[in-house]
Length: 181
Image (cartoon, helix red, strand yellow):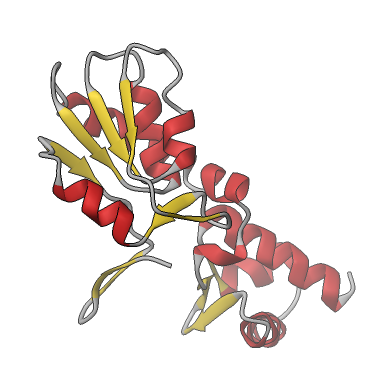
């Protein structure tokens, strides 16, 4: 297997799982740990992964397409969506931020007698029944993320009371707290 093919395989596995261990990759690809470390270093230089002691992790969601992000940890997202949806009662006003996990939450909530407020067109599209009322905040459209941002969005939110909100994050840091891309 050529180095480029090996790196594509490694990147694909990390995209699928979110991370991969050096020893596991070496065993799967029948190469040395050092070869995998070099491959991870190259992928890190390309801005695709972050190399750490023992393996590599996906650098951020920006390296993935929307459909790839949606499928990443799919079962976990569905489980989170079901738990979140269980907290929502009829008549509530629910805030849903952008993200693939919140899209799953929207799908779980679809058809309920609630109002959903979002700045995400993808979340709004997941609410197709017509029974669930959808309010989109407006603002400046950011096509790459399918969401609206800016003062119009926040001004509209200031006019509303949310009973509950679900906000997706890209990561959690010890000092930085919650982050989004």
